[in-house]
Amino acid sequence: MAGAGAGAGAGALAGLAACATLACNVAGAVLFLLSQDDERLRRGCAARLGAGGVASQPVEECGDEEALAPDAVLNLELGDPTMYRAFWREVGDCGATLIRGCQGMSYFSDDDAVLCWFLEPELEREVRRLHRIVGNAVVDGYHLVVGTGATQLYQAAMYALSSPARRDQPVPVVSPAPYYSSYPPQTDLLLSDFYRWAGDANTFTGDECIELVCSPNNPDGAIREAVVRSAGAKAIHDLVYYWPQYTPITGAAAHDIMLFSVSKLTGHAGTRLGWALVKDREVARNMVYFVDRSTTGVCKESQMRATKILGVVSDAYEVVPPARARASGAVPRLFDFALRRLEERWRILRATVAATGAFSLPEETSGYCNFAKQTVTACPAFAWLRCEKEGVEDCAELLAGHNIVGSGGEQFGGDARCVRINMLDRDNVFDMLVQRLSSIN
Image (cartoon, rainbow, N blue to C red; front, side, top):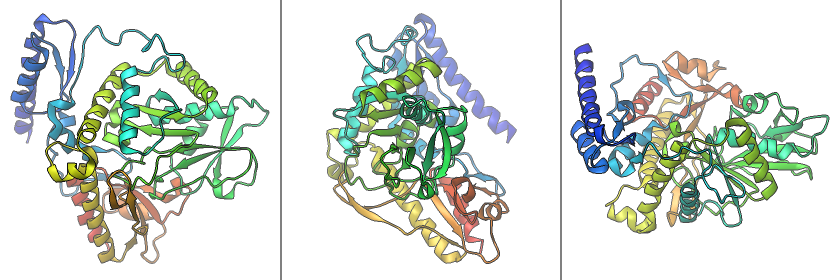
């Protein structure tokens, strides 16, 4: 095994060396290539950089799936979206981003910007373009704020909604259980005097609050609306999963604050990029201030890569309508790819769960999708698995005994008999998950 690994490593290094040789005559260009084959790597460098450039091609991002040992621990606790690697391998060098050494050096992205001065104009155009194509969110009349993932924008939105009050008591932050497990620690991380985590929105009895509405919901995939109806309640809508591979697009969302991320959309979790569509200018201005003060803007390399990636997604649908796109199959189309994979995985998982009798899942839902122009079944990014075995009170503990690591339900303000399982991992990981679940009865 060591010899095989050394040989593979030598081949990869040889490919990088070839690109490094090509780089001698051009100063400081960086090329992120989404293909693994050495010959393609060399040809890609030569064709795209001409006289030269420096190529960075992390093998783990584009290589074939690693074999799993029979007793491998399946870490499905986090939502690492490695399922999408297969799609971007198929896209190949069309998903590459060339960043020259002279690019992105200034703090400022747009000299003419009057609000979000660190937002790359090309990224803003691609974000608005994709939302218009999919029809999942209104963009006209909204301000766009970019952040280091939806996590930073969530913090920025809480700051923006609570800072004007500046009261003696922090504004309560709530979300209906089961809620995203990161909401409580993210809310209280900064120990802010402006806002503080206050638990389940279903049991909140006060007036003023900030409600976090995740829809489709993480962990159970349910479609959510705000539940607190008091006059002092303000909502942040976390819509990172409101894309057609996960749920039917039933209309264009038009909430006051809507959060999205590249991670859940295209699988590029490592790019660490998200955006917020914000209706109120003053709220958007305060969110920009938070990002400015916390990280002095957002990484331009991430924005450039996201611009390219979103453009690839949009190009596949803008020229050919979705219905015809499925029939032609000529160009890789992200939503079609992901929906096919998830439909098949959910079909297998539901059959496995039904056969064991040891578990249950939320009921399957479907609806007419305005984007796909047909009725589709919801395929959440996570499985909210409930243990039905008599005497078992902790589902996560049960699965851990079978080398399956999931997130226990109590982390989400829910029942310990439930566990959240990532549905977006690699094919061989999912296959082994199903094999192990089928052995539990």
